[in-house]
Amino acid sequence: MSEVLLRASHLTKRFGGLAAVNDVSVDLWRDRIHVVIGPNGAGKSTLTNLLSGDLPPTSGTILLGEHDVTKSSPEQISRRGLGRSYQKTNIFLPFTVWENVRLAAQSRAPQQPWNPVRWLQDASRDRSVNERAEKALELAGLTARRHFIAGAASHGEQRQLEIAMTLATDPQVLLLDEPLAGMGVAEAERMVELLLRLKPQHAMMLVEHDIDAIFALADHLTVMVNGTVIASGEPAAIRADRGVQAAYLGE
Ligand code: ADP
Ligand code: MG
Image (tube, rainbow, N blue to C red; front, side, top):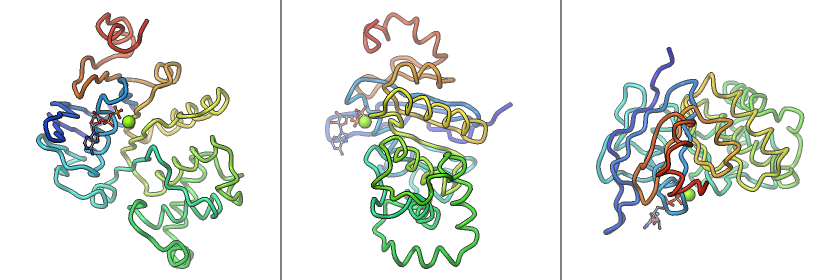
């Protein structure tokens, strides 16, 4: 039996008069991939930002393991074992793949302002940081690319690097916003394989548009429209739901 690692209950986020996320509940289980889909503006990124602590909810609660993290900072949430990637990348392009992963391992809050040279010097002295980085590189399938300059890597490799950087903080819960965005068929297949490899160890929530990937990956599918969950459950049942087809899948 797998375990619930994150439990978000009745989350609402208002921006002025707009409920970008409206009474949404999500459970994330280890060894299960929860995919969130919906048209642009549905509230998918806002939901991700609530779970990672990048935005405070207007109401509702978030439990990470045993801990109530509803009011915690992104840094505290990261330290408690939640890792996320961003739609816009945090990769430092002039550095190598390895250096980027090591920087991410050094900082459990990679979105903070930082001094890369200083951090690299510190990181080289810290064995646990190196070990975490090494493990993340291997999990993400990038060991052979470690000496590549990140800016010269292919789009697919940069997205893999983003995952490696997220893994470098040693998270149990992974939130990935459109991990397949902009990928060709072969790159997308490689990313699907990578995510399936990560699944047994992690509870994952993905925001994704790629229909083939959604149905290859999802153990649980949630459909959002205008901030509200219109359907949530087994992918096959969601696919057959006429309301969902009309609202989103366009089948
Ligand atoms: P999605 O990721 O599903 O495309 P978003 O979560 O980005 O949707 O946005 C949901 C809604 O909230 C949109 O109408 C968007 O314009 C609005 N929104 C998102 N972020 C903000 C913000 N910081 N301030 C005001 N409105 C926002
Ligand atoms: Mg979005």
